[in-house]
Length: 290
Image 1 (cartoon, helix red, strand yellow):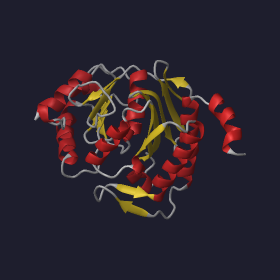
Image 2: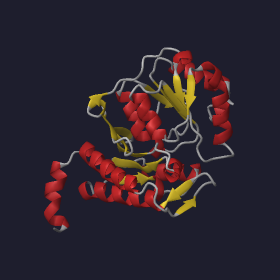
Image 3: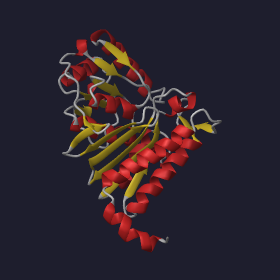
């Protein structure tokens, strides 16, 4: 069947969310089939920043599935951007004025994937004029699909999600992370860990920003913070948290947008306390708080 024959059928019958779900599910199943295989692997920004042929193949698969239905839409994907924060910022600037922008992380948690540690995900978001309107995160190992549409709530296994009820950090289970930037992000994140550890019930570091955000949305984590992320790490998960009744800001407490790289997400109830701890520890990664 050629492109002209199928265009009227697919474009008219596929919603944005359906395409995101289909792309995440199909790609996730393919990624799962590659676990434990002999992977070709290289490094990008640092020795800790891994990329495999599975990351690249997964992004190509997602791009094909999206562009089949929406050939005029722009796509910002991790594997299409040079490593490092400067390149990430430039890539976002280049597409931020697009009417429809898909933001894709084909394997969020590549290091986990490489080691066979079962905590990684496919993250796909769609922004309309810079505002995220669809967010889908798929965990192929647990076969868990997290889906949010702007203004319509967020769901996992088809059930409506709600953030947790803890009102204080002392009762909270908080996730942190360690992105592959040893010079700036690592010291900042370590400062956050040191400041938070005595004030929370416990800390977790799963190694997938997208799943951390999905878990905040699902009420499995009270909050999550990390310095030095990229738009594709956060976009889908941010909408999941917001649509589940939670809050997502920069680590300095400013409203979330696609340019936020230092993120704090929570059930909302303990958000102010979380931000306060980060500011007092000078662990926001933002110059005004140093």
